Image (cartoon, rainbow, N blue to C red):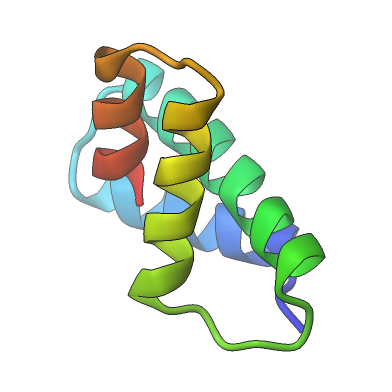
Length: 77
């Protein structure tokens, strides 16, 4: 099972070490949290894969999100 909080904290640490801007870290963290919640609800018990990321991005497109939002989601993942 994916521990969303643990994964987001680990991602934050990585992004800080890579010298990402604080605003970028906030956006990427929010995206990661939404994505991981989506995966744990839609695909419980499965390991993360690129197929999950693709499914998530397609869902965001179907929701009518802008291309800049989709690009940010893609970059965050």
